[in-house]
Length: 349
Ligand code: XIL
Image (cartoon, helix red, strand yellow):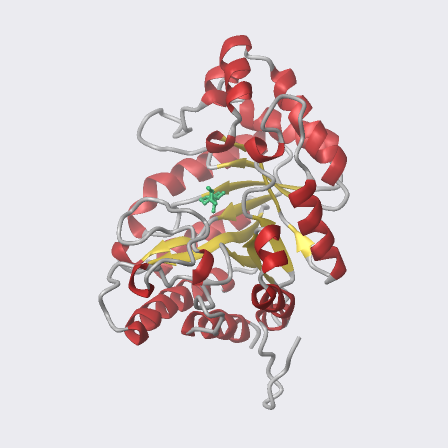
């Protein structure tokens, strides 16, 4: 990890460590293995890794009882070789339930399916990975009074499925830190989501559920204006007051205007990230920041529309490619890299 002549750390991992935090990235081992420049950047910049999708249920167990562990094994090994930790993403997510499991869950409502999934994954990775998103994106306010998302787990087991999942994870990985991971918490018009989440976490805590931390995805969107520092900071403080630690788990920036000159686009992205992280890192409970990838080469954000794209699209025309990650497609540092670094450095002063 490099230091500049000034003595200030130049890598994000070093800058983060200076304030007792960590920096990392989501990654796919196939890309790490086939792209030496990506590999080098990750080794230099990161202390943590999140498997971008290889640990999701439909990737790990596409057919009942047939497990695909090689990509996660590879990422864990890569992390181990370079002293990086791995964030377990994710045990339950409504969008990554394999079709066969969805069928059993909706027909038989059998918790044994969940238990077997957890035990297969945690028996293999419960030691190597000690921090887990047990449930991803459980909220969807506007439908039910409690704000929980209507999904196959809720349909099968009722709102208690989240507590049960946490208990199940605790039993099978007793030493791991267990988290809920959620999106859409940063903008001022997300008051309802924040309220729901706080109320829900209070309920979980009151019921004695083993919940240790909250993941805030941090998918920023320049089309939604700027972060309201006060309400976002207050929200983080309320989460911390409930005894949870916080991780920014999936930071990236969706651009609003790709017709601007590149320098202006990169400035806007960097400014949004700086503003966001300055608020987040002012909260001592925030332990780390993970970006949802390192380079625009692999952004999951599609061009021009609000939808999602493929995780890899090197063929995209430069103007179509979203520029919301720390490195550009040629693996050069962008102003977003400086914004993250400076925000960590400012937090350690
Ligand atoms: C995305 C991945 O980046 C894609 O490759 C995959 O096809 C779909 O999922 N919130 C999450 C992540 O918690 O798991 C999602 O990752 C992005 C949104």
